Amino acid sequence: LEEHASSLYRFLVDSSVTATIQWDGPSSRAAYAEGLEKFEEETRAGLLHMFTILDPESGSPVGSIDIRPDVAKFRADIGLWIGKPHHGKGIGTRAVTEITAYGFEKLGLSKIEGHVFVG
Image (cartoon, rainbow, N blue to C red; front, side, top):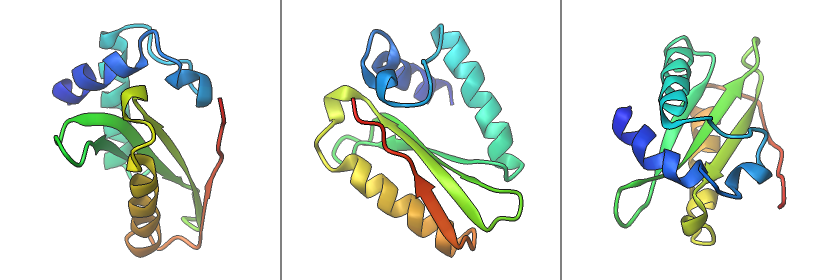
């Protein structure tokens, strides 16, 4: 968790990444690590399923994706961000494909939504 927080935080600081998602980004690396711990607790409780996106070539963290089922576990929405240096490489497309399959196959969802922000 700490390793991912350190690796990912650099993509959020002074970056345009947060301009295209529903989050202004963390106020500090410690705040980001604390947020990841909270998300990990929510994942353990089944309220959220959050994953770190790894670069397929280097295996290093480049972003994050999550799927949030509703209470009835009928539908969910997904959230995604990828560090700017890794844009345009198909990493997001692959992550969305994988988390969609996870949602339908592992979580038994009937509907998955994603809202796209273009910046």
